[in-house]
Amino acid sequence: MKLFISILLVGFAFSGCSKKEKIFHFNNKGIEYLISEAANGNKTANDSLTNLFDLNLPPQSIINKIEIDSIKNNSGKTFYGIIIEFPNPFFNRFAVYDSSMQCYFIDKSLNGYLSLTSINSEKRKFFQVFEQFMSKDILSLKRKNLYLVNGDSVNLALRFYTQFFSPEDQLIQEVETFTDDIAQTKILSEKGLTLQQNWDTFSFDERSLKFRSRNNYFESLVLQLTNLFARKPEKPFFYDQSSALKGFGKKFSVDSAQTYNNYKNKKMRFSLYLPEGWKSISGVSFKDVLTAHVEGTKFINVSLGASFGVMKLKANSKAEDHLPFTLKNKVDGNYAVRFSEKNLINRNYYLCFEISCYTLKFLIVFQCPESLYEENKQTFESIINSFWIDC
Image 1 (spheres, rainbow, N blue to C red):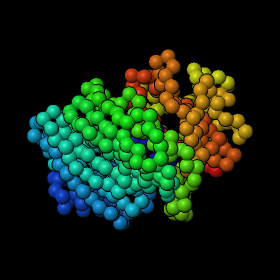
Image 2 (image 1 turned 120 degrees about the vertical axis):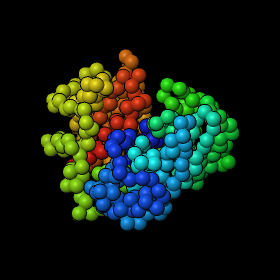
Image 3 (image 1 turned 45 degrees about the vertical axis):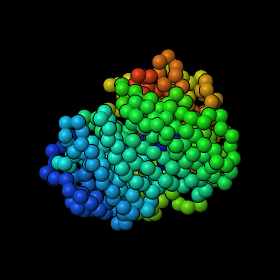
Image 4 (image 1 turned 180 degrees about the vertical axis):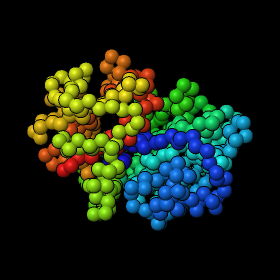
């Protein structure tokens, strides 16, 4: 589900980095050595990189490339951006450290072939990462990511697709104008589809520190066209943590997936990774949005004012039997997944998933206050990414 999640929530699997005192000093040779050791399963090296890799997955001895670039913030502090590319893109990373090896940002959601550059202007400074990858063995995509260095923090400020090639369509989105406050793009159809919109504008929002478009037309188009391809990939691909564990064979099997996930419901036959601060309540219903009664497990984070519910459905039922809106989007990976757009009800956003595996089917409903959704959607992504079914 890796591509699905990244399209849905605009970049899933980001993490901040804990503020720990480091004894290392940054240099290119040293960081490359630490990365290689950490990828090979060395816990000490991985700890020094603030858990850059998930050590419950098998070690990765082959690294396609490591690229490093640097940016100085307005006070003169140097930040180092690093991309690590593997033969299996599930393990790809982008991370930012300072000269004392303090970690500021890790992105685990990057696909395919990666490249790294930096952008400096008087007002803003960015690390720029390009991705080039295949989906469903036949779709060729490219994506642009801008990570803003703002004072002593780093965040994903812009992510959008720049190319979608299929046997029928060839679509390109080019940046025509880029300033501190606006990114203007031109959208081209070189083959196939007639476009309804030939341009887009992403304006910088000072509050969220992100470039935003009103409708992000090109991304919506990519999502729509990708979902039209019902074909399952012939090449093995790991969509999430659990599928990666299963895909590595007996040593990293279902038991390993269960070990990674810290919440397990044997009766309902699912597990997931529950971040710190979340509490579970069994035998309750998501009454504020469900139109039909169905009980399950509700998970609550009081400090965020957010919650989500996991409910088991009958095999012959569907999510719409219990919801006031439809799940228009669909993707097939290790599980059959349908999902909704985010729906605003009484100043709360609701995002719903129907996940099926053989005769097992689950409805998952996320709820978050409108004002807190953007800053917490990465947490929701990490939860849904870890969802595992015993099928």
